[in-house]
Image 1: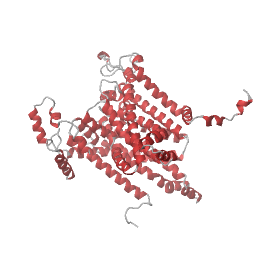
Image 2: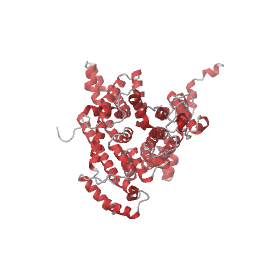
Image 3: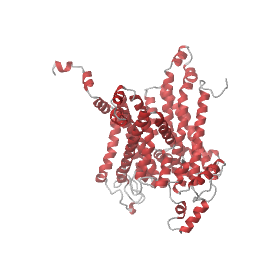
Image 4: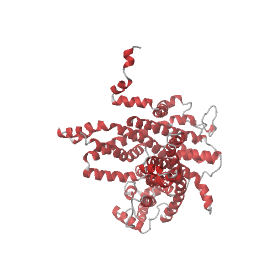
Length: 292
Length: 296
């Protein structure tokens, strides 16, 4: 190696990187993030390609071998109508990994729009909208979901809308406080002096500058959305049979738990646990990367 | 709002109870006896004024007054919540304090990370795993919360330990984290340094100076968790087949039993408001800088 290359101090490399590359770099160095991401990607792969490497059809029953304990043929045993639990756990990631991200996306879009509006206009708009949002936040998600599902019936769409709209106020609050800080800056005043429309100022000028807090909040919410989707399908609202969804499988099998058929629920419970912890680890990593 | 949510959106009550094959005249007759064919505002007024007088209406399904059901269920839920709270408040605070006193050492890592991971898990997941461990494999605790009739206090307590554990785990993380950060802040403050430099024994500094200041935000957190706790109760009571307010609402929602559903949810709202009030009161008792009224 030549002396010229070693002479340049390493700090200069860091300074030349764009802020986005900086964040990516510190994400890739964060062990928490990588472990979380690995877990999440594993389940995403199962959701996408699970059918191809699952040993059995997750919906095929086999009454003769019902409730068989784990064995070499059925690694995780079989459920009450003889379906292979291992295959069901693998394919069971699909529904929760569609519903929860869509709900989070809805919450982020709605929450960001509301947060921009309340933070930018302040005054009476802020007062009215914020009070309404606070009232919404006081009601537990499960209760909102219960009422909505009684009224609208069970479907994946209902679950997405309920969770999305319940989480939107929380994201709106985060966005609002970020906007309040941004709108005092010179570039916003410059845009206003140029007579840009309020919409332009909000979405073209301010929005790109508050992406980091929105991203952090979104990853955190994804963890809660998975929590909520799993809980709702366990309660029988939302994802419906014969989907091999984890929460649903637990709710249809836990009645027999006293009989010692532990394999019908344990693996689904562990799957939910690993996914939730994975998302939370990744969210923790994202939070750390933006706040260093 | 609760009333509107329950009343406006769903379809025909009589139809829902009698099923899709019932005679239309029977449906109309039932709707009339239940009073659901009256204008909405009339229904609302009679509902809210009766509720205030302690009359919660008549259940569509049981055809008997709602109030005894709701009161029973609320009592049961309070027992369950009380067990969870009695366990979690001291242990959570203790965990946070220990973590803060061992800041960044392995013990702190274990408490913080462990607390965080159990907090993010859905209650029914931890519930299932706990049932498997303590109920099915070790057989230490009963897997259902339905105790035998005429069970005494300790028998009931014994049946409530397992259902209260998932709630305990979720709350533990929150409380320990708040107690930890409160402690760190208080340990770092000038008055703590003064107390140490005054030559007070370490134990006295912690008890008299640090803890009192550190626990204020924790108390607020505990109170705000009441709202969460109610959501958690719906899940836990279903999982353990416990006749509480959560499972009452759940069953009422499934059966479209609106008087029951509305009374249940309104009761929860009242409990929530009372809990918040108690928290404010406790806060002012513990914090000498805030005093209610004119006691000085």
